[in-house]
Length: 512
Ligand SMILES: Nc1ncnc2c1ncn2[C@@H]1O[C@H](COP(=O)(O)OP(=O)(O)OP(=O)(O)O)[C@@H](O)[C@H]1O
Ligand SMILES: Cc1ncc(CO)c(N)n1
Image 1 (cartoon, rainbow, N blue to C red):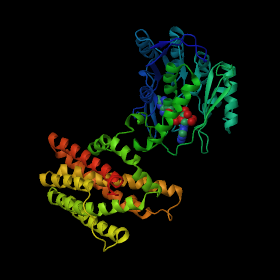
Image 2 (cartoon, helix red, strand yellow; image 1 turned 135 degrees about the vertical axis):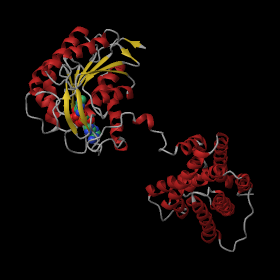
Image 3 (cartoon, rainbow, N blue to C red; image 1 turned 180 degrees about the horizontal axis):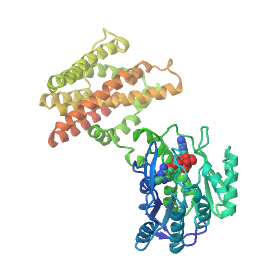
């Protein structure tokens, strides 16, 4: 889709595209965190089509730069022309330019092709402190600025561009950015990543007033991580991409900063290299991905999402959480739960009997769990029901749940039985944790009539047992046939529905 652009600080030739074609002209990082590798990921992460022309090959990793090989500039030009002779370029991001010859060639290509949108990251020094631009090329880089729309210097680079000392404070940095913008007629993104303190401010500055105001600040909290390799590359290529879609610098920077914050927050998960590792460019694509090895249980959990939502919307669960639950409803629930736990213990013992022989840990876990279940049952009698009270009769919902579990026990598939057992652990851990967290925040722990109940299920030992039950279910799923896995899904969903009905049963049957 193509739109014309009005005056938002962009060049007349700019045409907005849903999926902009973005060219990165930059150096390489074989570890994938900076340079063109980071640019391609950032462009993709922000919805663009990425292309790349290599200025210099850099033998580097997360610990530092080993050497730089700059191919002849004639070959650089061949790469640039190969792209521009064929592809309509919507935006260009320029990174490492290495030396004066490279700068001259890129400059000549820019003058010949006039791309509608150019973002320049004036790369001089890597995160590791190694130089990526020869000092003799600094003047040529300064002279390139009038050909670009946005320049994104960090604090030391801003100082070099102005031939001044680096700013010591954020106010000084913004003031330097304003002077650079006025001198060159370019929008400057001043980056505060090199400051110390709890925040990482950035500011878009345009002395010509193209942004509506001279300085637009973007505040973001500093992410505590040492994995910031390539943030500057990633930021500039992402801005080029989003700007080619929105045509609005302020909106583009705000959107990209939000993405960058997420990429920094998830950086530690990647574990790439021993030095300053990369950021997680594509973190948002994997946000819902279950941990490795838990794909099966992860999909079971997603499939019962409507049931989980319904559980938290039940009046019983809401009132249990805030303590306003009627004592009669709670009493009915606890009495039914004691009956349920007795039957559930037998089902767990059956899982122990069916556990595969080469893994005694599973057999022991289910046998222990059957024992724990009986202890919890007697504890319910002791603390809530009175040890000598007449045993309640199995209510209709309890009976349906127990019958379902016993029927699956009788069928003899270990995997299907685990899937049927699992919701009782998982949903209780979830309910316990959420209600407990909510009641702790309110700070009325002592006064809460059901506080002790909530504590049982929010307990860390219960969470540990739940994680093991999940892991055993996943491992059973890996050896199960497709038919058996389908039966596991059905059993998990059926038990989850029983859990929902069980929480709703007091409303329907407590008065009967
Ligand atoms: N720890 C952090 N937490 C949040 N944002 C950060 C952090 N470090 C850097 N940033 C942000 O990342 C972007 C790049 O900033 P920085 O000043 O580090 O650039 P740079 O030095 O060019 O990056 P590079 O590490 O690639 O050399 C800025 O938007 C900055 O605010
Ligand atoms: C190729 C290249 N460009 C930029 C940087 C700055 O992080 C780097 N380390 N490597």
